[in-house]
Image (cartoon, rainbow, N blue to C red):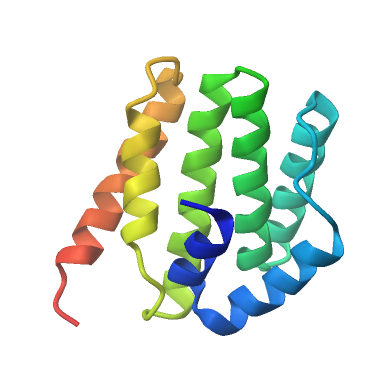
Amino acid sequence: MGLAVFLAAATGTAAFTALGEQAQASGDRQAISYDKWLGAKESAQKNDRDGKYVVALQYYLEYTRQAAGLGRPGLVAWGKNNAAYMIIKMHRQDATVDLAPAKRMLEEGLAIAEATEECRKRLSMNLEHVRLLLRLPE
């Protein structure tokens, strides 16, 4: 699923529109490099700390893309976990945020054989939480 469709599904059209304009302003997708991965990681963490979860999600998705391009599946698993966690945080602020994309990313992360034990633990805990929330009546 492309970034645009994913963000629209997870965060709603208004947030997506702002991110789409931001992405167009920054140009096409970045080339794959360790520096780009590290930059995405640092930006994601900063925006997470600042409570800017939609922006952090965008950077975690780029982190994941960079990690995949670098051939680092263990980092891809962490990226999927962290991106899913941003959706969980957004859902805590606004219950209309769809958790299905988070569930899918967590399941994909668990399917990565190279994920570390610690990463698998976090993926599993977050997936259990998401599944519980998806079963609750609205």
